[in-house]
Length: 225
Image 1 (cartoon, rainbow, N blue to C red):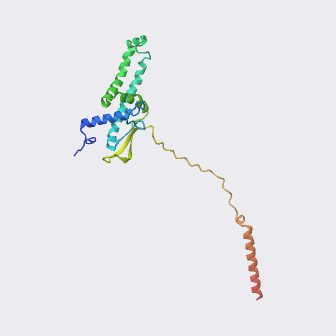
Image 2: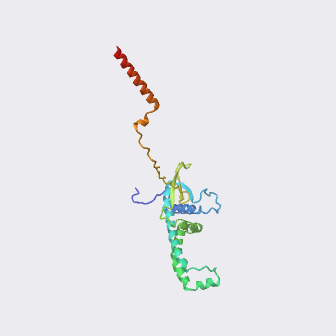
Image 3: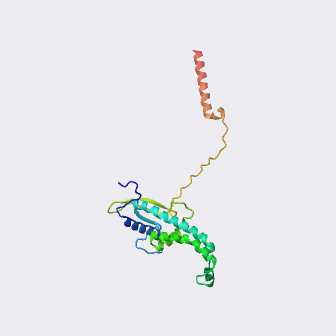
């Protein structure tokens, strides 16, 4: 019985699970770099296909890394006021390097550097860390959580018939709900109520005259008898 134990074992020990999710997270992030030529490059960037339990376990790990990157972006933005645009190694850069502005810049950038190192300890992939902080953090700057989604696939995996799912970053293939169009009813002028005489057609008048004449003839015949 595994009461009050968080997470899925997935038939692996701790070190195996840790290495597996590290590789899966790095692979998902590196799919955003389409310039890299890989044998199994996905057709859609920012998407990998795996089993449903693995996707559910990978999702919180990825979203925590994106949250770290967003926090680092805020520190880097605050430190930009103390930075310099001078080329590295130039006289202006050396002067800035020996000034008090550099001291303030290093103090402001220290938390961002620490967050990058924390992300690298999880991913162990320098390219994935670079994509995480340079692309994903600005992309989800205005989004509070929910950076990925899991979509179950109808086809099952060959061999063990495991249920497959794709996990991808949101924002690219989102379905936009079409707002219901407001139905505007055109107000028309109601016609005036017609009198009973207007509904009498000429044909009905002829029929009523013939019926009246026939009634009079029958009354005269009965009186003559």
